[in-house]
Length: 208
Image (cartoon, rainbow, N blue to C red):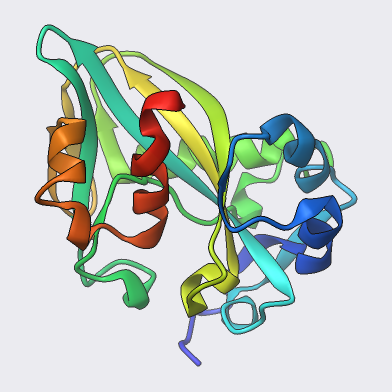
């Protein structure tokens, strides 16, 4: 077991997802799932070392997609996961998702819920990217992939971030080769290198 130095992360019980309606891949029915997933009674902090090997729990992971719409068309931010990233099983894969775990530092005075979750989302964005200009942020889908060991213990919450401009750069070594590109590039030459969650998003991204 990898040593996560006692890191605590936000999780839900897998049985909750099953009771709401298990799905494989991506679901845009956020109004059905989110109220229960982010209800204070249904999520709690758990030791990450245990959670990474326990498929009876799902780690809630914000997965933020960044795009720019300008005279060049619609372009999406993508990068290669570097060796210093927290999830070694995803190293060298190409991703369009920025985000990470929700930790106790994100906890608001209110019980765990949407405020705590969004505090974690904003912290992750600020830690991983340097963005010049404003942006909008909306939740558009959920990701679940039980076909591999990483996916079995994670549940992604997909955010679509619309940037005011393309002035954005990486803040961490784990985010390598950061650049904006067209959807045609993602579905073409890059597609075979995309991590599973990114493929799920790219396949329907024009509808998000």
